[in-house]
Image 1 (tube, one colour):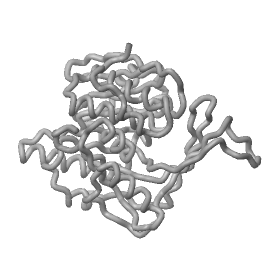
Image 2: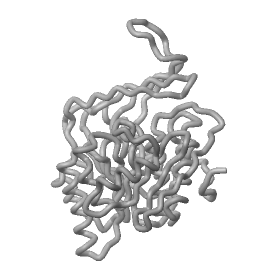
Image 3: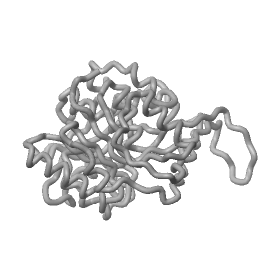
Image 4: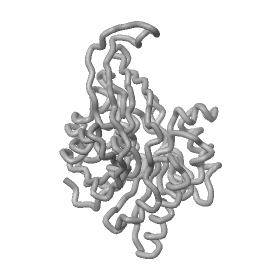
Length: 309
């Protein structure tokens, strides 16, 4: 296990109810699935899990529930050694997601339900002592609160002379979350959102996003499925295409993006990789993840190899 300061992952944790089906269900039918299980989900929560499996020290910061149904999530976080000691709590029932995985393709379809579950606030965040951490990772959501949290990390760095790095997982609501980008060190931008914007490749996305970011542009990474990922080092204006890992089989793509995110953070922060090598390792982690259900098998990934074959 690394001796580096912990990574703080800020965002959501939910219950995922997963069913594995031979094919996608036809509307208005009654059928049995091949298998089913629940697991702890949510973007930042998943990133925490994979970082821990890779060997990083990690804490999760998000709204937890005192509901009996949430106990299984708390037990899983505790069992994995993911810190939650700074998380606020609510009496409301936890959010959940219904996930349909198709065995033939490994595809996943997700229906979310959060019933106005509260999100962590800037005031919650300010109860944390930031000098505990070497990296803070945010989800691009609730921009009004998140922008204040990111600025708090920047201000801490300025006053304390620290170098806490900031990453952003950018998946939804482009206009609302765009102001967050210029405050981070690294952005991982969703290919799905890129396609909604009409951007047709990972490299085009990196340059297009960079042209929209103010006041300063961080490094931008855009995974693009089986074609790999592009990364734009804005300090030298160099964009690199990094090929994807070719998995032996595709079993479960749920959480592949979160696994990529965790792999990138681990390679950059713990392994001290340069940007293209960190993206190469992230591709390896995501490719390894989709070859089996869940995340635990990621612990067996050989970390001494950074790039694809």
